[in-house]
Amino acid sequence: MTTPNQNSVSPPVSEVWFCFKSQTLFKLPSFLFLNLIADSRPNAKKNKKFDRLSCWADDLPKDQNDREIVALIKYLQTNVPWRDLSRFVTVSADSNAHIDRMWKGKRNTLASYRIEIHQKELPPELYRYEKLNQKRLERLFTAGELFLSSPSSFNDPFDCSFDEETRSAFIGCGMKSLCAERNNILMFSHYADNHQGVCLGFEPVQLAKSMSNQAESIVADIRPVWYFNKMPPIGFKSEPALCATCKDEVWSYEKEYRLFLAKSGSLLPVGSYSFSPEALQSVVFGCRATHESIAFVKSISRDIRHLKYYKALREPNQFCVKLLEIPKL
Image 1: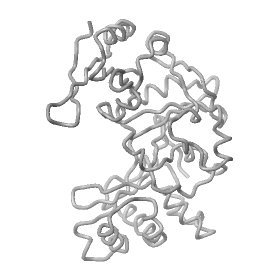
Image 2: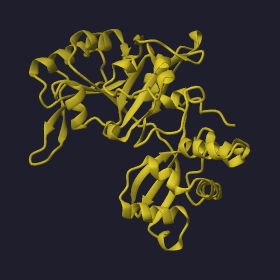
Image 3: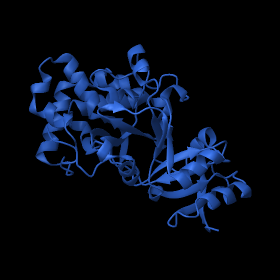
Image 4: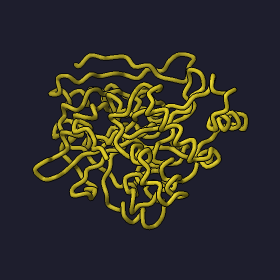
């Protein structure tokens, strides 16, 4: 089995794309397929293709016509019926019939529908939506402290709570939720005080590396959150990280990633942890942020020279915001 790239802060895992013409209909993580295979085939883990998909994905061929990719897709099609997969996604009855035929390799659908396997890429920036909590923002910008919260304080009661064992295991563990978008109006509404707060942009590799401490064996890890319409077949004892990164698909608008700190295989507790402010790249002020709020944030972040500031503005006649870069002072 291969090991993760040493420059990676998130284990590069693979995902299966279901595509129609130029569109990607949905994506499913490889671990879902593998768990379904393992549940029905006791000796599945001895298969070389199973082992290959279980490994880190940073060396998977990018060419979808590569023989290895074609063989891996065929392996999944042969071992996982579409009826088992369809439980975890929401598609129309018409689409379900077409995808079922595609999954079985029916010729008359191959021209329009296709399946691909890709590495799940870490975005170049990840974002944190925050209320204008002056004390917390001041510690973040001036002291380089990032607060990791307990999942018990999150707004999803099912978060990290597949069962009682999972819920108990994550009590007191710290993690930070991040988002792949900086102009998400729902995120501004729900987490940035109804657009009065801020959205902080981080360079994820630099953030994680600055929070890792080799001398103390502390490792920072950033992982994507996966969304399903049914709890996937995973267990805490064998896959604790997945239990913390699987949510109901109603939360998919959050496009979430999660930051963890671990020491000797155990998650570190709730609390403030040091990071390099150099990992901060941008600040987006909500469309309702006041002049006083903007001036305060600029004042406490003035020593981060490369930091860029943006103001979210409502787009006329559209349900969206555009970002306008604003001066540092």
